[in-house]
Image (cartoon, rainbow, N blue to C red; front, side, top):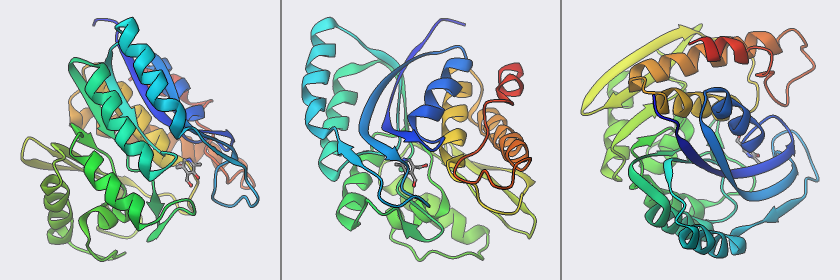
Length: 274
Ligand code: PXL
């Protein structure tokens, strides 16, 4: 397996176990050089904390991209998550155009919504821009809420296979080549991932652990990207990431007061082993 370098573009939430503070250690643990481009710096993430600071780094992006271009730096993978502004999406597309190595894997986690609602810093104008970024995705990794915003479909908590198929068809209509849809639950107590790749749908189901923990979407996407870049199939990477998230949640449950993020660190060894 050749040594690979990935670029991940998402925010630094200084405290909160999400975005870059999760992606950098997890992808590095997968044995991949991980370059970072912070989209914004926040004192904490935006869910459950109030009064967080927010420094948008949109205007730093063109010069960073120009420097990388001058140095001839390219990436074998580019993975985007929570971004700082709608305008930033234009710059992110330019970074992909200018720094993707041949065969570069582009993974887009729309990271903008959950449980039927957009996160506090986003609006429908951002959703419109995110739709355009979907066209760049070799792998689009939304949860159901994000998929609904992007697809323009109603958010439902109970649904059938036809609803999931319709969501995924609309995401492919935006230009996403393959879709990994998380949080797909067809029966109580169980949840899973719909893996749509090369026109074929597969589903991996596992135990659902009650009570939401923040940041698990970021853990999921990071583990998926790490496993995929290490040569796993999309289905195997989706399964490895799902099992890892379950391990992280079980680990976090040891302290019921620790709800702002998942304790992914003590179980990194299990991910590495896979
Ligand atoms: O986990 C997604 C995420 C990333 N970054 C910030 C967030 C959130 C979700 O709320 O607030 C700043």
